[in-house]
Each structure stands twice: as C-alpha cells, then as structure tokens.
Amino acid sequence: MSVILASASPRRQELLKYAVKDFTVIPSRAEEKLPEDIAPEDCAVYLAGLKAAEVAKGHEFDTVIGCDTVVLLDNRIMGKPENIIKAREMLTALSGRVHKVITGVCIRRRDKEVRFSECTEVEFYPLTEKEISDYAETGDPMDKAGAYGIQSEGCILVKGIKGDFFNVVGLPVARLRRELTKFEESFYL
Image (cartoon, rainbow, N blue to C red):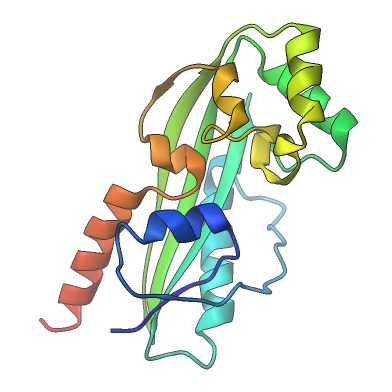
C-alpha cells in the first residue's frame, strides 16, 4: 500500500508518522470553495474530500488522505488571520470562551472513500490585551485556523480541552489509524 498525504502542513506530516510509517506528501491544489448551504460543522470534512479527490487523480491505486481543520466559535468559522489585526480580533473573540476545533479527514483509493470528522472543545483563559498583543506579535497565529497553535506558543492561552489534543493540532491520529486499518481490510474482504 502506498499512502499519500494531500497536505503541505508540517504538523500533519509529523503526526501522520505515528499512524503510517511510509508515506509521500503531495499537497492538494484543490480550490477550497464551499457550497453556500453547507453547515459550518460539515465544512472540514467537505474540504478534506475535495483535497483527497484532487490528489487522487492520477494516483487511483494509492491511498490518499485529505485533511482540513476549522475553528468554530458561535457556529461561525474562524479561518487563518490575514494580518496581525485580524489575529488580535480572533484571539479577543476566543478569550475566556469555549470553541470547537473540527478536523475532517477523507481516505480515498480508486472508487472507495471514507470520510469522518473529529471535534474537540477548547477553552481559553480570559486574556488581557497585552497577552493577546504579545502572542500576536510572535507571528505564530498567522498560519493557523483560529489564530493560535496549541502545540506552540499558543499553549499558554488554553485553559483546557475536551477531546483529542492531536485533533486540535490538525490530525486525529488515533482515529485515523483505526479508520485506515478498517479501510485497508475492506479491500480484501
């Protein structure tokens, strides 16, 4: 079995090593356009499917894994901040609140596909303006959904989580390993 990760994320690449020993990285170039009527909690798994399908073209005999992570606050998606001002706004909105981190995963080979998502609740401490500004100035928030990285300097913002920690980083490794095992076994039944 040849496995392809359809993601350029160094965090996902590092985590996938725990579930799969050998894999290739081919970042997806799929246009991440959502249908207008899609529910926010379904966006991550939908985008994961788009990414896997795009990379699977020309790799139909390989197992392709597509992923996407969204941060939801009050049922609103908080994407990656465009600039430091947006990062501060997002962090201010998350301050003292609980939000959801949903990672969608799509496993695909030939005409067979399995999609799933994992949801983790994250609670932030109430943050001062200085804490928000200091963290935003590190640059760490700029390439992360919700403007923070729980695995890096953003860990000091987090009061607690309910669910899979690695899901918040960007890949629910334990669930992925189990889903991959079932997926591969189904080819030989």
